[in-house]
Image 1: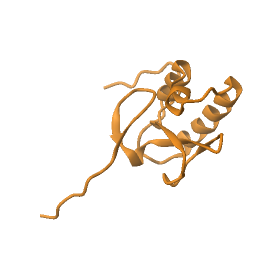
Image 2: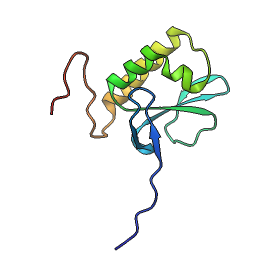
Image 3: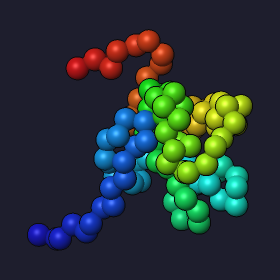
Length: 107
């Protein structure tokens, strides 16, 4: 039986669930600019988010990205980043559904 290698785990700053690193979105503070790190290898401090609308909204409400990245971020920049992330979540074919506002996840 082949041995399965170690899969890095990261914690979502919105829901605090630990999941495989590859399933999360990585937000990086690189040279003072917030970037979405597609490759997962960009230098700089990072925060991880699930590809779920609720996690994005919770992270914004709790100021979790700012706290995780250790910087103050203007509300307009957060709103723009969340808009961009929501588009990516909806376009991503990760198998995890993006839950619209006000709907239950169900069983």
